[in-house]
Image (cartoon, rainbow, N blue to C red; front, side):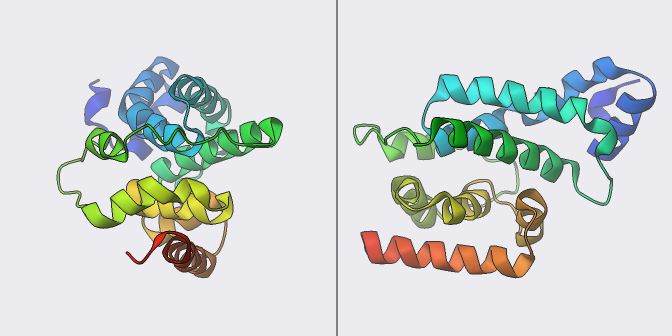
Length: 183
């Protein structure tokens, strides 16, 4: 069976029922996106890779609790979000932003999946300034503008109502405008 052709939900069913080694396909599909997300949130690529590995292990361990009512990608991002939250709680302070690192380099590193569109002005503003606002507002901004997740997907990932997602994105954008000029 060619697991590469299976949709996520069918792949999960196959992994659960027949072949746990097919989980490597899940890792292959989502590793780059989760590393990008976690690297942006903690600004340390080595640690981001370690946390992504932890998230994949946690997601696999809890795979039987996955419900198909939720997109599988949202399930993985939720697991990554929890892993990042736990790491940041333990650390107590997030790593400081290295101003010498060019946000243009980060923008170039955002590989687009065919059909994705990002507004370069919004993306550059989020990349440049979002790390200076509280995580409560940063997470929805990054998930929406960098990871291109819908409000419904973000709601599933963060386990908050869609109205809260919308509110946090609006408030986060307002914080960015107040602190760093209008965009």
